[in-house]
Image 1 (tube, rainbow, N blue to C red):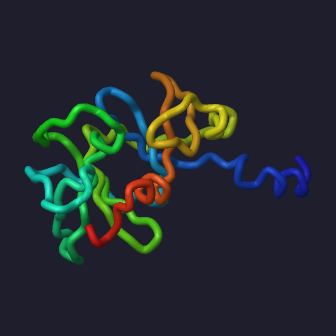
Image 2: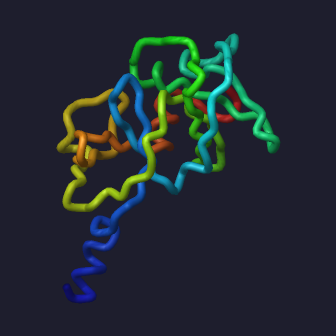
Length: 157
């Protein structure tokens, strides 16, 4: 491949590390670049006056951040927090939020040949940024900024 071809494909040709998590047995992913860390979840309750998907706030030592219930965000059945549920601590656009998920499945590389752009992925709510077909099935890739902007979830909630 020539330098010009490499520059032309640039971003699309690179493998991108993704953090894969699950909800109700379905796999989803976020770019590793927006994930700060993951921790085990603790019991929490719905915050009065917050959007339906904002479960609570947690103190990370550097400040309080909202906890977004991804089960509700992805229209999965609501349930109480389990002992081994996880919080993905994420950051985008100058804000930090915790995402409550069922499980963290690990970090994978998304080979360009196996990625599908959003336009080719079956309709999904919330909309996906793309998908990757790996062993075990399809993983829906989400853009954190778009995922949070869809319902106005930000630092004030």
